Amino acid sequence: MENEELACLALLKKQTESVPLYSNTWFKLVSYKLDYYYDKREFKKLEKIITPLLEIEEAPDVFELQLSYYYSKTLAYFGKKEQAKYYAQLAISKLEKIYHIFEDPMRMVEIANMEYVFGDRQKAYQLLLLAENKFGKRGDPVFHLELHTNKGHIFFTWKNYERAARFYKQALHWIKDTEHDAKKVIAYSNLARTYQLMEKHKQALEHFRHTEELLLKQNNPRLLAVILIRTAEVYEKLNELDKLRQLMSRINLSDLSHGYHETYKRLDNLTTSKSKPSKANSLQLN
Image 1: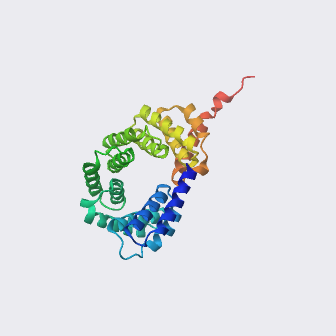
Image 2: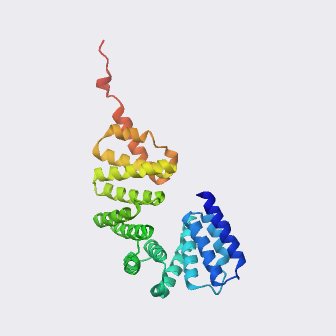
Image 3: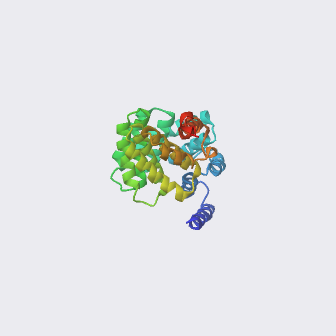
């Protein structure tokens, strides 16, 4: 698969160099290249490619929209939140001008996501509904995953977990029988976390288990550590300390971001204190 992708990139590069600079075909080929690096989350390469492209004065509206969106995501990745917000608003304003002729369903969902992150969540939801009305009859599982996942995010943020779970469940339905394992991880983990907050422990554990199995195949220790600690929290609620202890022994603190350290310490202390015998029970009879 990797060799095929590299061959595709090489072909894109060759074709881009063979067509007139700034022609419609040139913009389309560069757009494909940007899509590739964004899908791979290669933000350093995206930054290198996008920076000179921002200087083009007469680019098509859709291309400018794509640049603003990807550059915002790139800046956010590097922690430049104010600059990211500026380019997000540019992307949103560009979309508002051209959405009625827009024919890229994924881009509409991506811009709705940007509106959700940086702008107005009610507006983001309306944009998602617009995308669904315009493209909902298409049977693209990735589109429907992203559409319903973003709907779920909005209701999750509003703490309406029932509706969030409903949309996350639809997202999982569309993607679970595909080969998009990384996207399946997102779908299962979103639903698992929502079930956890709803205290639907059995469903939460089931979906965390599916997520864990996928992550073990992908060799993703950082995300796996998050899933394990969330699972541990469920066992804590169920007071199943043996299972909690087994999970904690599998988690490396170094794999967890700082935001999870307090939870890790609390759970670790819980298993340690419960495993220690009391003084009365530790007395030996002579």
